[in-house]
Length: 161
Image (cartoon, rainbow, N blue to C red; front, side, top):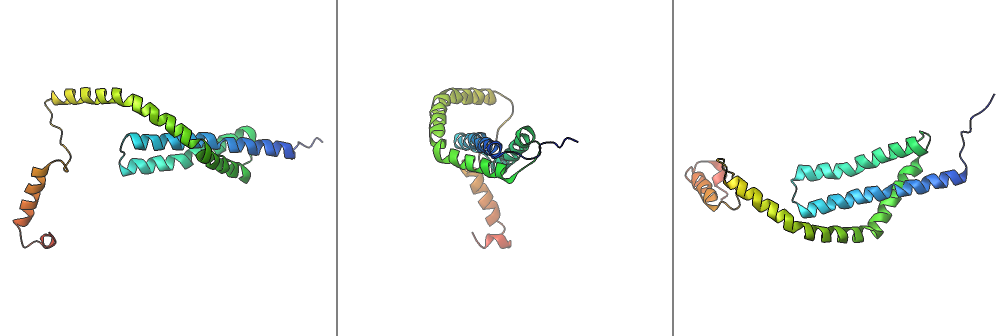
């Protein structure tokens, strides 16, 4: 009867831990990409929450693939610890230069993006539809709303204005 080799050597375990530390690099790049997108375009809060949830989901998927590929299907705690350590090392060392390169790229891309935005605005101007502007810019709408509220003095919510 042949017993399969179920125990790994210390060298194999250290190599797998080093590979798990390298898993932190794509997680750090994902984090920097999401930070860059937040700086470039304003996102609504639900989309920001979805982006924040994307990082741990991707980390879990990376760990599952890493475990299946290199860990013989056995998930060990030091894989997750190694990925976390790699992510922190990336954020402490490589994140600043990567964000600097992304910021320079954004400066170069803002000119074409502005042209695209102006072209889109011209297209929207020539359509039969009307697009509502932000209520912060619509001072007349705010005054009309306040007037409508003050016309009904018996309502409770008018007491605090």
